[in-house]
Image: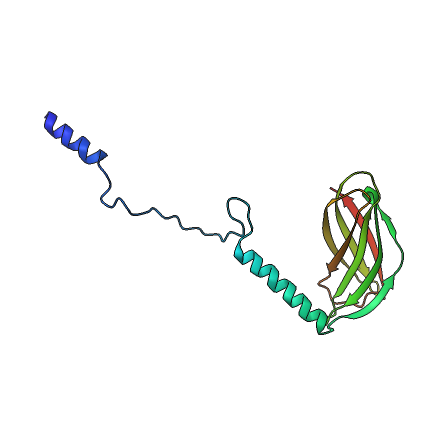
Length: 161
């Protein structure tokens, strides 16, 4: 009886029949960052493709100027936005470029929203996140609006985060 119990214990605690086989987990998601937080090669390739496409479109002169607004607008959180230039890409969608200045004495995170209006009153919005803008520093922003319209005016707003 003891001999059977000892044989059963040895059989249950012995090594697996395939000791060198790895147990693999199959991921259903693709990861853009590794566990350590580093950017992967696929994300770098995507960023490079984006920059190459943007450079091609600029060199092909696929944008035409719509107007320039020389005003600067005081927004919430101590931000000042402007001057603004608005171009229209080859699909008819506006591209808004402006400079955002932090006039406060603290670092600011903010959501900046531009409302673009055409001569008929149709409005489209685009937004961007300004992260860690240092006191009295400025940053250039470029916002793309997916709606095709002929821009006539812009208005800005900012929400401190």
